[in-house]
Image (cartoon, rainbow, N blue to C red):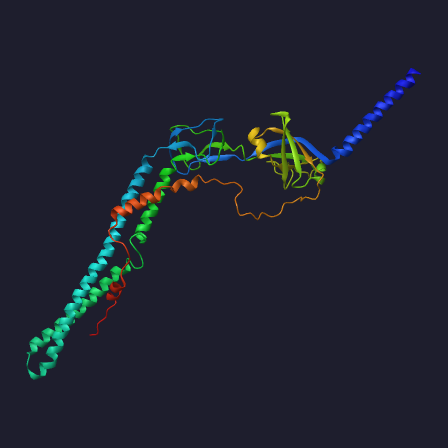
Length: 393
């Protein structure tokens, strides 16, 4: 009797457990796919110098948190400072040289006017003598001298016009500031100014310092790795799902995650961002060769990229490589397996640190221009016409 009663109780308990498991699967488990093979991933900003030089100071250490734009490493500025000062002198010299070109145009224009006056006088003298030479009012010698003077005055005026046109061609359609010589000198100033600014190597993004190898006194080039920055806001999770679970996973599905770093009490929320173009084995350094006689089928895993809520990341920051437990809600199966083509023109990741390297150079250039500039404007139309004059012999 007792044995029969125990059997009934045991059977009832097993049945209740079976019903409970079925209800759990029917209402919850069949709408979720999960994996423990998931790890935190993110951007790693590898910092290198934009110019070569000797390291004079290092302002950060491993595990330090730095803000974007913060100076991390400085290089010796001696050579770059000398080059910058030399370019400023070259700019001032170019401005003065071009100014002389403009002034030379007006000087030669005055010469043309002078030669024109001499030519007019010689022309009048020649024609006056030519009119009376037949009557014997002037001697033949005086007539020949007037004719020679007229020809010489004409040649002198033509030469003056040619010299004026030559001078105009050097400054035509420009001002002192827009002249090619001055613009080339300005670009040289900008280049040396930027190179001087690049001696201060700044953080292109906010994050934690990692893999610092740079040392004070070290000679570095633009290819020398200095350190890495891990932006804590540019983090996602790569969840490796078995291929037999990929049937119902779609882009945009909701995801819940927990990390061993904080425990099960902290639940991160996110969404499926995309599915990798191949299994992890394909992208390994030594991909497997399955066309062999000893082939054994192994269930492959496909990386699924999952976003993490920025609010949770700020409150509970993660580190690259941490293990995650990922559960995807597969209720919504209308999403895409392959994302739509990228149409956004905005970059995914961007820094404006390098755009600020020219900040302040225009003020420096303007100061040099004002200190050396004594001529403004372009060549007048009157002077241009003066250089095009022709005289018939």
